Length: 279
Image (cartoon, rainbow, N blue to C red; front, side, top):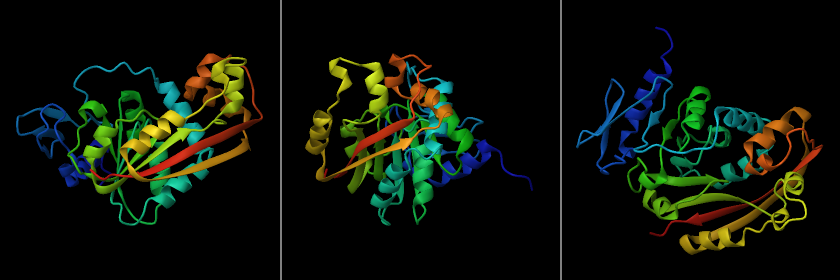
């Protein structure tokens, strides 16, 4: 028997974990059929695409991120630039964690690499508003559930996840609390003052944007979650010449400068916030 198609494999995997799904329109439980339809009791239906993902968007999105951007993002992440961050997150995910949701997952490289670092199997689920990002995730990474969706109308049951990842992406803390199991954890990654400072200096020289503070973001996180741990990860590493334009494309900071600049080194400076859901 030949290898299953992406769609067939995804149908089997999503059917196994169909209890995670909730209709983004009416919040009813959903059933995954053998022909790849995900349907609720009110007959709202979403189809698993041939690439192996499902689009749960109920209205058009205005994502400014292109297919090319996600290709660049994947190459940069898979170069190992964020290895220390991924190692820290994997170490923070204890053996009790069985389900992980990556919000704003993009093309899925962080979730894939973090999952590969764990010593136990988890159900990895990624959601992003960008169809291009999720298509790329489904293309390259198997044995995950990839969803195009909006956290304002998320397609998941309440109390479904042990851990939520939110890596350099906007957050929806009310939805995080709804989706997390009691005592579940949120791991949020936010820039610190030196993050990509080589690009920031080029983009915003002599302006107030040249410096950056994350105090407001950190304080809001602490208002929503308990027992918050905050750890800073900072390092400067050489950057291969061919990765410079790709890094400039993947980060909004890079959209403000000429593409022909070069950097011999790049600084990663991030805060990892880990909080507990008490609701």
